[in-house]
Image (cartoon, rainbow, N blue to C red):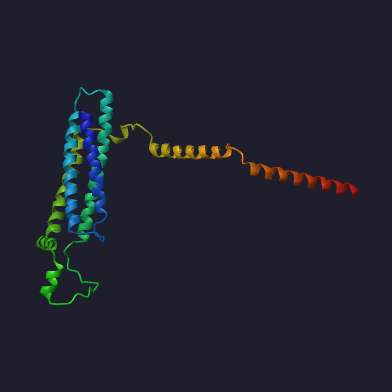
Length: 237
């Protein structure tokens, strides 16, 4: 039961980490906004909650001296996968910190495109600002506070990784994988090759077309007649 719970936690952590990585790639781009920063904050906090729960489960299991050899090997594989997720999460958090610092949301910018909107400032503001944009303006320091919180969370994840290595000594190079690297890709490629080969064999060994057979027979007869005529001409000359 503990192993299944660890697998479920790791699966959720892997999805959260992948989602966070995808969101980090859009920071500073055309899709960057406060909505994105809020989603980044929620996703990384969810990933950290899952990481804390998974670490507790794996640490308790691997420190159990009554654990069998097969069960221990499985938990060690889960531990290595968990460590990899944490490393990726920390790297993406550092990338988000660098990008968020380089591209602040509410920095004063000179408008590069004139929209053609004219009128008094009060009228333009009333038409342009919605309830959501007004809330974002009121929370103008959101990105600054979030970056400070992100710095603290990066330190927490780093400390978590160090504590893991101290409490449970599972060197990654000692854990054996169940299958060779790229086995899934090789298996799918072999399936495609076999299917293509089967189709080609069927095409070669399929029923003969009567029209093609007749054309081949006529061509052979004409070729033999030409060869015989050439021999006769050579003898007469």
